[in-house]
Length: 317
Length: 313
Image 1: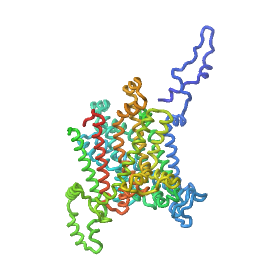
Image 2: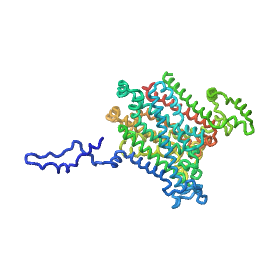
Image 3: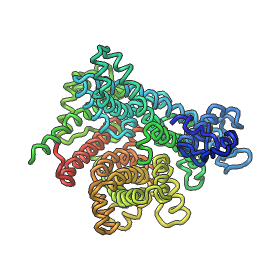
Image 4: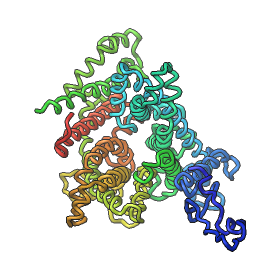
């Protein structure tokens, strides 16, 4: 709904401007056609009111993003600096979140770790979306390729994503790049399936028939009519993929198949804290809390996006 | 056997073929030359070549794939590089803990999540609904090992109610077995509960709008009976579907949960195999889990026809 619908002048303002009543004409009370909502919200307040999920998720994610980008200026020290004299210290004024068993500052490691998680999450979301979109489009538009492609996707989807990523990581050495590739491959079938479904239903739309009848070329139909309509459901899916990629990255690093310990990531900080968890649980808990909050933020953003893009679904799931 | 059941069973064959091809390629492109490993450091290039020929490693991809499938069909999953034991035996030793964990989790999650979803749909829009849905969002966001450590820290270390880690085989009694599985099952069930509760609520909201629910209500059927008999029965299909699909989450989560709670199951086997680059073991576990996943979902599709006689394939 546009802003205009709510721009109804307050009653008293309208009344004061109207001409004073004459003897033979009594002004009827000013009744607006549409009753204004209890409170008229504009700008940011309105956005927060309408999409609380997206607002909260976006704000949390923004904070996390800033923390990751500005990590060097947020009171951190070198996250890889080993200080054997300060091992496994509890949180204190010098080491805000304590130190790990090599004396490294957990606060610094967690902030730098945010970079890895966010990079992995975003890269996987973008790459899996692009690849899934391409495969889904081809599958949805080219009938002959559809059967084969979808069987391959079904096969890939039959391997639980974490196991698939684990199996792929077993082939290469651990690095951010390889983790991104492994998780992307595991996530592609889901996007491809979604896009194919949307494309198949769009193909039956009257406006696509009309475009075909008026002689629009197939690439143009895809570009103009099909592609734009796949973007909404796909962007929602992309946020969920981002969230799940961050969790899978943490799991991979946690079991030792992900990012090597030299680059701090939330998963490998926890992996290193694992042996000490019974006495120094904070080593595990701080990265865990950061990871949970970030994933929660992305999920909220996704829920909000879904509600905004498909209001019919808003109150259901 | 009705023809549709037959067709549905046939449709799993291409899917499993793709899985097999994928898993085989994994070993095929894996770094390291098995012939060189077997030959040892002292071997000359000619020795390595002879071993390669003896093992049939020099033959084309498709022929090797065919033989590998033939072996698998006969229950031979190869030999572990690290332990030199048959992968089949390694897996067989580890099946019980994982199976126990999954079954307990499944029962626990379903018995908690379905009522949660039903109540959320019944009380839609109230604080009860909102808090259940908030829990569901949280369930999706908190990674499984975090729940694990928190629960273990709280209930095992601080309160000392339950054992911290480990696994007791079932033959040593029900309670010792069950006691060790409580925390892991809650941990692993967390995401699963969120997933099932969400879908249950969504489907129930739809079903509760139906005319026959209004009819039932107007003729005075008890609320609980409307919810759990009239409505839930008709909402069963999507719920059962999600339970099947969610099994993938459960399998992935088991790998981590077993690491947290030191359960010597298939997940631990996988993790150890990765750290040692023991490809035949990784291959075997991935293959096994994928087949289980495919078969469970096949079984669920067949169960549909029991739940809802209208469904035919």
